[in-house]
Length: 334
Image (cartoon, helix red, strand yellow):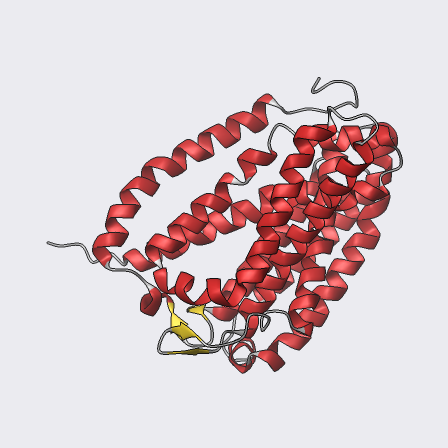
């Protein structure tokens, strides 16, 4: 008896998992870069960079995995989204390149160290904002005809996408602050504790504005959220609960809980976005199944992904285990 397996759904889960792993793992080191210019001292900046130096490049593996999987499993997404978001994606990649170069050169530099400080901060900020703006453009949808993007090169940059860009900037900064709490001690850690409450307030405010604004840019979202039988409201409720626990744990000066609760805030916000747009992968027109590649192609690629993903998870887990603990300015880990 043949099994009736929906490969498109399997690939949707895989890519959604890859995206959320990238957002969480690369999000906190982008957040560290966003906060870099505001650190209390150069010693604190050394500690902040030491906290992410062993893991930042591995975190970006998930971006490659998700992007390659998207190309193979949903080629229509590339056909439409890349022309629509070309400038935004270029800014994202340029920011990541500047940040990566700063990692390598800052430790060697003396007189020019301030330039690499700004390269690290600027690259992180541009990359984070571009990611948020791309999310905003996705929520608004794309102008298409006959499976081709027919809009302009700057249609992705709107007041709404600028707001989502700033929202993700604040969110990554919050994630970075809680990571700094987890990985540092003394003056740097205390500075990061003081950032949590104002950053959380900014994040919740921006997310509230985006939540109110979204139904006006996509009526489908309004219908989905305000359906009489809708259970989607459970997700933002859980988001608010996690935000409250984050605030409490920071006030009580816990070290690990603020980061865990921030991760939970991101996860439930991400699930809320997916639930609001489901099942459209190229809104407002094309669903997952309409954008999917041939089942034979999906199955061929799935075999490789099922082999590679456990390896990526294993070495990611091992890396974080090896480099666990606190960091200092003049030494790695202790």
